[in-house]
Length: 297
Image (cartoon, rainbow, N blue to C red; front, side, top):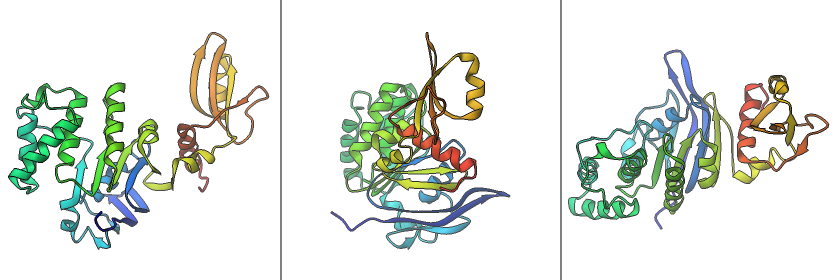
């Protein structure tokens, strides 16, 4: 075990021209898998690029084990792994060539790098395809190569931004399992707008909306926030627009007996509403919608 790891985000704001992409964001992270959950455009990618030392905050600071990474990025970079959302590959290079190239850029020793690449190709089930050009890889395979490059230096801080977008359900499950296995003695930050991604992997979930942190909690605490607030109602489809205006509807299923609605509401939404067991999706929607309605968390 190395020394304890601590990533501290203190009152971080980021301004683009006259728009704030992040506002007064504070969070302290220790080892484990952290799910950063928020709608598209909530500020997740902005925060990820600040944590990955790609951009600096306009206000506030981020420290790694007490050292400001804005002024001393080289404190973090050797132990950082980053898979950005728009991760680009070189289509003519094979997986091995690509990983060797990136290992060289990261300054890894040649012999060590080759051993590490062999290990990672094994872990990510890419041994068979190691010499094929990346241009012919499927979306899921490209993502696995992306994760492999982020792990070349066995990072202490691993940041993955929207990694399952565009993957089919099977690849998505495989990717989540990989992330869970990786946690060990490191901080893993998984940024996504897909609730099931964090549900399957995260030990702690931070919800972000409109550039602000709404809540950071373990999944159980989030579920408790919607305890006794989730209901099912069956209605004729003609009533759907009216109900949608009145209530927060988290799911709609059309069946032969009518439309089955899942509703998140503080009070029973109609005499025929039946209580349901809450899910993380319900808690997330409740949290984000309340914030938009101006209700303080």
